[in-house]
Length: 311
Ligand SMILES: [Zn+2]
Image 1 (cartoon, helix red, strand yellow):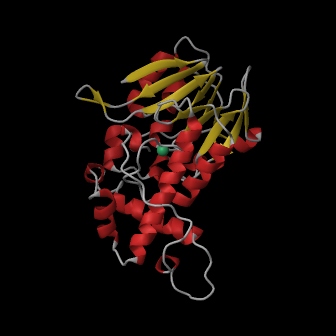
Image 2 (cartoon, helix red, strand yellow; image 1 turned 120 degrees about the vertical axis):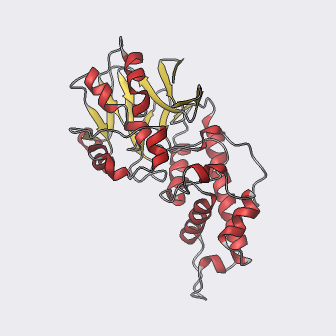
Image 3 (cartoon, protein in one colour; image 1 turned 60 degrees about the horizontal axis):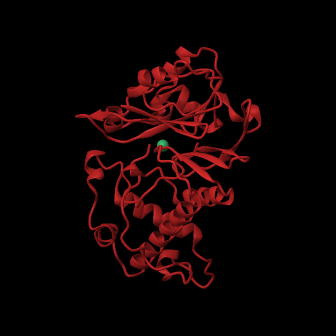
């Protein structure tokens, strides 16, 4: 399943595995001035190539090595041979050998397994700048969702192509690979850029990105504060899952535990260990020292964006 929308001169191509005629989860590629940013999953690769027929793809840039962003590479390269492909140095090994992604079965089912890709260039080679005939995009390191994640920023129009560094809606389940300190730091970096259009991996384009970015940062810090408070009160992870999320979401079941609220709680713990103030009077764990005074109150209930599952 594939849809195409135009946002000014940016073409938004959203792709999803159709299940009984309905999309499971959307992922997006963006086409701007001959530059294709991400390529979607294997399962929609032939549809993507049909959409790209009649266009001039001159270069491809990848945000990170997850299968729903690199899966279409083989088909696009076959249709546009010789087109240079760029990714962060950290992403190259998984793009060359996707077995390193260690895909669980649900990922194989939803997206399909990418084929190995050779001759993908490191963004170091172009000094973190991608030039098209009309635009210059700067590479912004935005790790956290994955270690190899970068975003692409066009400063004239203030477009930010941020992959999965921003995921809309309330966070209810994370993978164990996600790093909350890096996620929050990357979101702060993105907000500092003052983007006027945010083009995320879900394909849901944000026209007023700053409130969304600041809202997400606030939500995560509030959640970490709530976890720290409950930790101080002696609550175990399972109890926190019940108290904060009213139990594990269904997502945990069908991802066989890869996405879980417990993982998110653990990410909050790790975040707090990094950000807690230094206490020289005790060697106790920072989580046992009580609540930080600068942590805000726990968040009220928020709506959940169906784009929550991002690989
Ligand atoms: Zn991802």
